[in-house]
Image (tube, rainbow, N blue to C red):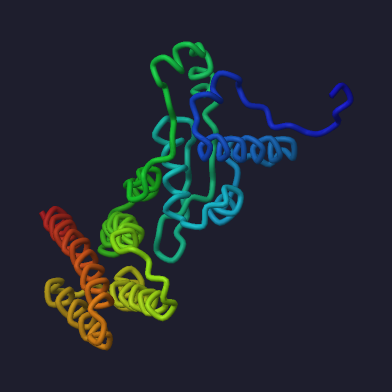
Amino acid sequence: MNNINSKYTQCPNNFIYMLDGDCLKLFLILSQKESYWRNKGMLDNDYFSLTINEISDNLMLKNKDDVRCVIESLYRNNLIDVICCIVKGRNTPNKFKINWSKVEEYNKLSLHDIIEFKYRIVKLERGTKTTYDKKCNMNNEYEIQDVVQDVVQDVVQNVSTTIDSIDSIKSIDNNTTILRDKNNIKNEIDNIFDIETYFEKHSVPNDMKPFADKLKSKAISFLNKYSFNSELMVYGEEYISDKMKYLTEFIDKFTMLERERNI
C-alpha cells in the first residue's frame, strides 16, 4: 500500500458520514468534474457542465426521477447550486457549482454529533417536488406554457411513483402472456395520459375537464380489449384510476395558477 499511484477524489472525512450512498456518489462525481474543469481553467463562475444523462449513467439510476431526487437532496442542503436549460420544454439541470463553504460547515460537525443526532443527507423519495429548477424562470414573465410545464412536472413526478405501487399491489403472475399483457396495458395507458407531450405538440385545451374525460374514455375503450380476463381488467382500471387522480390534481393546480395569473 506504500506505492500507490492511483488518483483519488478528495472528500472531507466527517462529511462522508452524513451522506447516503447515492448522495455521496453524486457529490464525488461533481467534485471530480469540478476538479477536472478547474485544472483546465474552464470553470464559469465556479460552474461546470454535466448533463442529467451523464449523472444517470454514473449513478446507475435509470429512472430520471430518482436522479432528480438525489440532485434535489444536495440542493436543499445548500451543497450545490444548479443552472437549468430547457430540454423539450422542461427545465433540466446541466450546470452545477459546489458550495464548499457549506461542505466545510458540515465537515466541522464531530462524528459523535453526526451519528448521535442523526445528521443525514439522503436521497429523497421518488415523487418529491424539485425546487432546484424553479428558479430558472424566476426573472421571466410566465407564459401559459411555462405555467403548464411547472404543473406538469409536479404531476408527472407523482404519477411515476404509482407505476411501482401498482405493480406491487398484484402478485406477479408467472404466466408470460399475463405479464406481457400487463406491460402492454401499462404502456398504452401511459401513452394516452402523456399530457406533457400532448401540450408540446398541440396546445393547452381551453376546457380541461372534457379533455380529461376524453382521455379516460379512450383508456377505458382500449382496456375493454382485455375484458376476457378479470385480472387484467382490474389491473388496468386501477392504473387508469391513478392516472385520473393525478390528472385531476393537475387540472386543479392549473386552474388555480391561471386564476392567479389573470388577477
